[in-house]
Image (tube, rainbow, N blue to C red):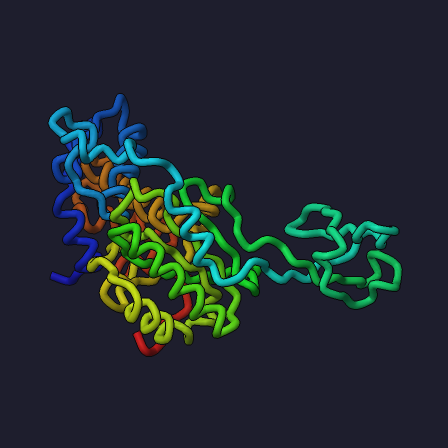
Length: 334
């Protein structure tokens, strides 16, 4: 029989069951119930994200027999942030910004950063073109912006590279599977130093609290698609200094033990933008699984065939969920 889904995805879905009424589902030992198939789809998507993508145990985390010493919430939030900040190799990201209002005595110019008007302190200006001309006539300024963005991604410590990643259509995510606080810090420093040495634009984030470990996405790096050439050096740098955990999300393509990649989602449907890879893939899977269980689609189609249709509708390659239907090829080395 011809395969219609990737083997790793089929393996993950072997642990998932949805009852025919569309009101109850199981992911391993984790059970969820909902008042409607639509509500169950949301709950199932969350469970798939946590178990299939992140790699948490499928056992229901609310089980009353869960030992108290496994209660992650007892550990302090943000306990990794100081260490991550100390091991970030740069302080600032370098931006070019259009000048909207000229320099005043003792005050810097007003520029547009990320669509927002900002008056920049003089010491954060690194020079510019056309600064002596009229604002708005092509005048630009070099601006130093703090690289650390603590509040931008809840639960994660986020940093922009010295060369920040510009908005672009094709962004590659690099996932590092970390199991301990030490591994998070080591992977973070090794990754960022490698990327800074290459001088490529990037963004990176790491789990800010050890309470969430282990995670297959404990450290995530965002690269422009044209910069895949740095991946062999990045893998070498991280592997040399870090004890990564084995395994990867079936939504990603493994490159080395504990290292995997996937393209940023590209969903053509309304509302399909601005979701994480794990959330996007999990939602598409959940939609297909519930649709098959309730026979809302083709009653004669197999579960794999219905899930395949749901993935295609979301712009996902069913045989390689790390890719979108619109994605370019991965680096030939992988």
